[in-house]
Length: 400
Image (cartoon, rainbow, N blue to C red):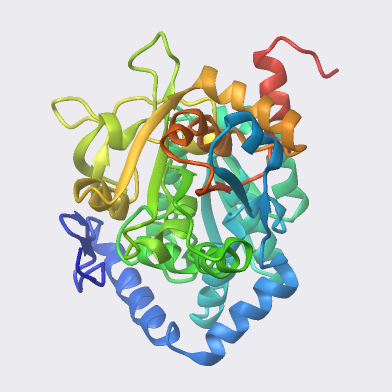
């Protein structure tokens, strides 16, 4: 595969991406793209971000050898890229740091964001608090209930949480409401999208800021085992954590990339969020990408045990990587995810987010293709504190 710099000038990754938005937002997107293109080559801008990554986020995140998981699967060495150790507990802070600096330079006074699992909401509220900006977080009412800890964290940080009761009351509907807010308040408001979704230039911006994960991994892999990993595994909902770790390795064909989707309930074939595996191309939230939709193009309800993967779309760059065969995407079901959640907790002393547990659930299948000479890296996209009450409830355990 020859090196191609994507997106192109129109914001497309192959056939996917673009700007399918109301005219009201075109000016804001053009302004954002122009400002970002100027700043991304600025040494001062990059130094400011790097300083925040080191002093505020706590980067670089460690690359940790999972000795007991390696023994269990009796094959390749398993390494964990510990994004769960970042300030706020997930990879989301990498992107919000960059976008809040952009917002400040653009003179915006008000910040909005959508969130599913709450980690992006917490990360956005965190950086807004740090810079003293008004902040509003939109969150599906169902996710408000299952992620009550993160809701309280967002409020502690001084942001307002707006529960969304329309539709399925999950991430898709939260994003709908955030876009409505943005259309109404576009002059003074900056919308921090939390994934590699939405209209151009957001998929590019979020990818670029979060690719710090993959860039660090290249350096750490050389230090720890003297070569690039044989494989990298990450969960995929909208796709920001996966794109952040995959992107610096796209041209390294010897590194196999695995994106793990949410297959939902094993016995209910329509209760899933496996967009790339079971979806088809369509337009949602301003971009052309794979969607979970019916034959008439209507978006269908989704399900995942994890709020952060409960979304019917995916980033357009993931759709492109699927079509060209660069990334192997496949789903795992809720039962396997719960098993992996407990397994990693008990074997490694690391409680992963339910989103991250999808990546761990794929280890049993993937590890069989590798030998003891090989190295596999799992992106630990977030920690599981936020999910403990959800898991306890599913397993009939009272925390009262």
